[in-house]
Picture (tube, helix red, strand yellow):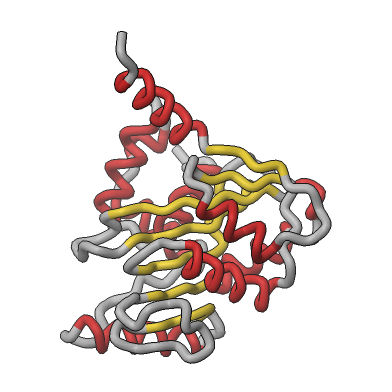
Length: 234
């Protein structure tokens, strides 16, 4: 049995997010019914990496900080780096970001190609932003993903931000670098969680003349609703 293209796209997106392969297997198996995806194997992931031309970064150096710098340099050489600021450094062009913060933003070649295609028809452009904790064995970092919705109604990650803090200043720098690369992104719909942080940063950066419909993610809305009910007196 062959994996559906939509599932391959979804798995490729998770690989590009840097999610560990065993976690991808667990997630896919948990969310699949009784179909080909439910018996996903490690070999399937390897085939998707090869088919999509994805790279799986190995450690460049035994020292984590040095390894990250080398990875960032590799991304810069490949034209994939959007922004990098290591901990202990102050960026004179973005002094609103404290020196103790770590910020790494990037857009892979395949992501840029997909994004460029979608920007040709902004009348249907929908974007989402969300952050994820505990993305690896390293604590204290968050992964923020900018996604677009494809013609197959699947979320496709077009840029990533790894940072020690997620706040308006850092997200605005992230979006500014995307704007420098892709131009003003005139999305018709912008979806995020119930925290206005992403929405405010998007409006401040991409604003423009177009009227954007802002939506809250259904999962976050449901969680907030349940929390409100549980805390209300009977």
